[in-house]
Image 1 (spheres, protein in one colour):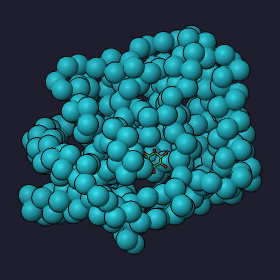
Image 2: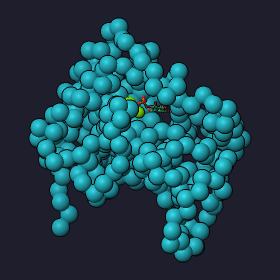
Image 3: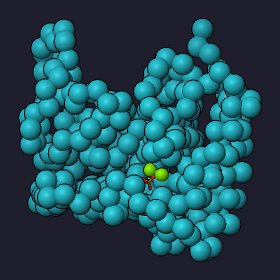
Image 4: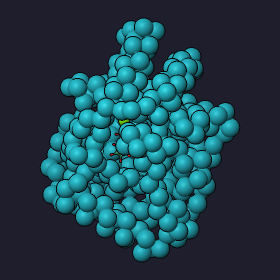
Length: 309
Ligand SMILES: O=P(O)(O)O[C@H]1[C@H](O)[C@@H](O)[C@H](O)[C@H](O)[C@@H]1O
Ligand SMILES: [Mg+2]
Ligand SMILES: [Mg+2]
């Protein structure tokens, strides 16, 4: 029988609401900003404070549960997802927005058991929009049911993506040529809100038709990937193959057709997986009809082959 994690979800919503008050209070205040992996990868005491608030509240109620938190990982914790009940937390998604007071800042909380996401919560703090989904039970924003646009025709798509924090030539040339190739399809437009979690919730709520990105982390999208799929959307790897939460690549779309259209024109740049495994090509056996016994472990330098189906 499927365990019902509904009470756990309710607890997650209650601590997300508490954390939002901390974010709102800090939003206007003076901030101490530190750098992480690049001059564009910022962190503040509020990121760390909100993560500590969430993790300590959860530990008190569920002492056996495990955590993957963005700022805990930045401080050295290992982001390996086991079968144990695990909370995957991004305390502030959109830290650069937070620092600049660009009013799109989200708290993202996902909960996985046996490596399967059971629920996801994304609280877009300044908008006061609390998105949530429980596996098999639909997706909601402030208790209103969510459905994606269902769009099939990519030439009518409004696509969201992120610029990310990479500033090296390979990442930036791949990222900008992806934008160029998408616009040439043509599509209606491209937007970047500055928080992957909110970008994907826009797909779930039909405000956009697809999101794609290479370089974000599992904590950015674990919650919103479930929210998109529970809203009737599809979530794939950037190649069009099977989505892998730890691979740092994703396409979330209104339909498989739109996802396929994006997979055909965008390329990935190599980036280290969240779980530290050697970079694996997402060779989805059903997609390419191969009987793969061992997952390939060599990182294909440069761009990944197109997996079209
Ligand atoms: O660091 P936070 O938690 O703000 O997450 C953002 C990443 O930093 C960006 O690279 C990425 O592009 C997305 O904007 C993501 O939301
Ligand atoms: Mg984030
Ligand atoms: Mg963050």
